[in-house]
Picture 1 (cartoon, helix red, strand yellow):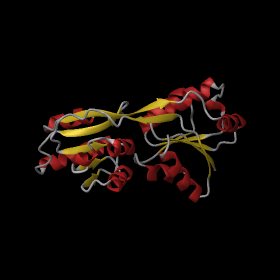
Picture 2 (cartoon, rainbow, N blue to C red; picture 1 turned 90 degrees about the horizontal axis):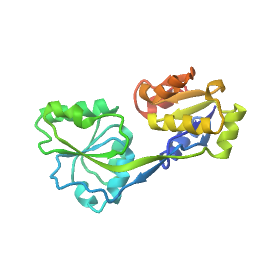
Picture 3 (cartoon, rainbow, N blue to C red; picture 1 turned 45 degrees about the horizontal axis):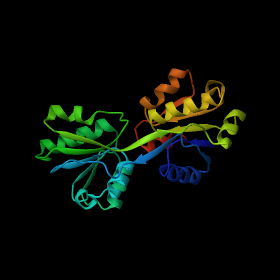
Length: 238
């Protein structure tokens, strides 16, 4: 299939490689640009752990002036990919929820029940967040200090090659990883005069929340991964 990958750099290159290894043709169509704030004020601590819901947070931590201090703190990662990125960045103690934000909250709550963490947690978060970890963990007596260390900025136009492929109806599928990116893809396509509802294109979404704006637009060809991770998303293609 000819697939568009809408996620931002540098993760889109890794996804493209995985898709090409499966025999698909891939065109990169990033609709968001991630800006990392490596100077974000983290607060004093001490922290009982770091909450990580994106590999972008790992990149921000790796560039932060307090990097060495952060590397000593246990990490609670939302999924396997973010956990792998944390280990690669030098974090020694990493636990993965292997799922979404709800799974991460359950993992942290279970660890707290077992006697840890005792100090507040530091959530290295994005400016736009799909879930509320602080709210989910508050009933368990766990305090979460949220610091925005990256933000996603919407692009204003699709690359010409992408516009032409969509207009010609030669795109078989589009991969969407976040609601924000799905919204951005819709907006950019509509601005280019492309009617997504009329195209013979299927949309593969990481979760029901990601798929929501596409369905609200009236697009019928939408598939949702069984779990909120990339392996489940790519499994839809099989």
